[in-house]
Image (cartoon, rainbow, N blue to C red):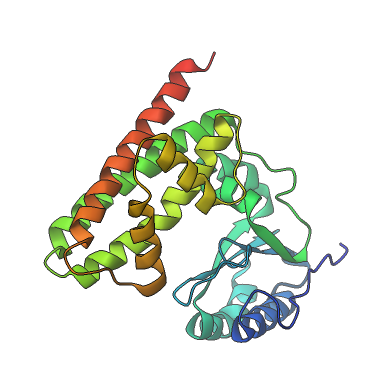
Length: 253
């Protein structure tokens, strides 16, 4: 298989220590898995050059087989990369890709939009979750987010700094859901963040809720007395997005 590696360039969008970690991890994966490694793909905010200091670095490794001895050779490099740059790797077998794309349609649609191939084949170029799977998964993502936000509010709302972290973590699923929702409606946005802005405005919410989410994501803190209100507005937003998904489902032939 030809190596279609897209090298990480010095001075690019990624911090230097992240570039080094990714380069070293990809080289370790190539050595550990040999011919079993089909592809290594960077996805999410790191792939689009929108990392924050608190961002995770997400990779997906596509393998032809998950061999224990090969995986064991990658353990130490993976632990080092995680400690140094919050690198997290999802391992998927090549044969599992169609089923995984249907089961996790919102995530895989997001990988399709925001990815950078670091090694091997671009397996996502032709991988598209079905419309039915995306509608079903959108409902699941939004309902799960709603239940999680309620749980975390009840548990940690006496500590606003902890509630700000909950709000920060809600940004990624909301943005991915918004981007998928727009695509299902036949529209696109230049980024998941822009998609969420468009959806929020279309639903009649003020932009200040997005300002609070961005602030929580960037600084892991919010002004005193605002975290609880922001979380409840996110609950309202998730509910309105879910109703929009249900309308799409009803309108489908």
